[in-house]
Image (cartoon, rainbow, N blue to C red; front, side, top):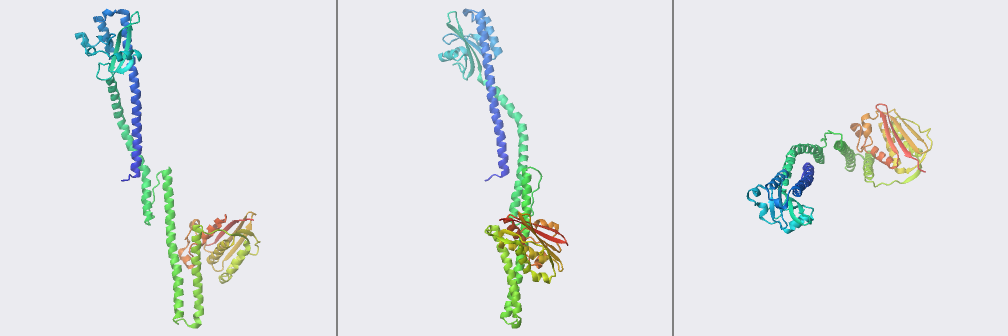
Length: 475
């Protein structure tokens, strides 16, 4: 079963913290163990030194079994919390500081001989080691001090021993205290990690749910932006993407509706008139008139299909520029003349062409012709009867700038940022009447951008609309 991101993040973070606490405990235990062991060795070594000094200063070898000597051993043993006993050269304990020795002159320390290897180790390891000394069942910290006579011969060895288990018990107690004291902060961290992980993963879960909804066509879900960190930025970007996709989906639906209408109307007209001619409903003397209407509708269909093909080529990157040198003014004149009949029928005033100077540019002539034709066609289409269209063409030596301005209803300010997007139409009802598909300006911007130029629009409602094209002049 796959773990959710929330569980993964939570468990990983929790494991890291627990591992760090355990590692800190391990280091603490090691440091405490070393510290306690060093102190214990020092204490045992001091105990051996006190007994050795007493023997050297006040006692003779034959007085080691006396009561005063035992009293000294007993005192040092209690103060150092250790077992103090003295062995002869053979490893036999001859005197011990425990209570049992005082009563019976025999004790657990004197039952067994100290092995020869322990006696040698006492000399070779500077008197500091861990061993059972062949007496204890469990390891003890042990220090030893050799006593030599005036001839340098060892006649006795002083041993001081303390159980390792006592140190382990102390470490165990410290560990328990550490664990108990860590429970509260671990609980607080548990809650904090849970809240933090939930806070980090909740927006991601919401994005996943929103993405699944978008896959089903629902673009209504948005991610609440509650922070200004990277998660907040991601949520903001996701919402922007959702808005764009929702708008694109609306435009797509609008485009499908428009295309369906554009295809249905001419096809119905064409089919009706052709059927009327074939079955004789339309008289022969009127057939030419209706064939003219059929021809116009076919051209209208052709333009629609051509726009869709152009859009497809532009989006797939299949088109390539074929630059050539041509006169931009001459192209503009040709396009305006091709619209002469429509201009005269609407009684439009044309200005700016007479003062225009010739300007040559190097670009793909056919594509630029398509852009300029689209802009001039829109200007004529959306200018009210009796209105005016003005043209400007100038250069700063590096760029050619073409402006086309027409009077009319204009474009609402809220629509200006989207005017060059696919399928976008300012006025759906008006656009339908104008045979628009919402692709012309998108195609125009794509072509101009491919040439390294720029196209912009400015408008004021019920006054004017102005398009400006900027193209680099390449020699």
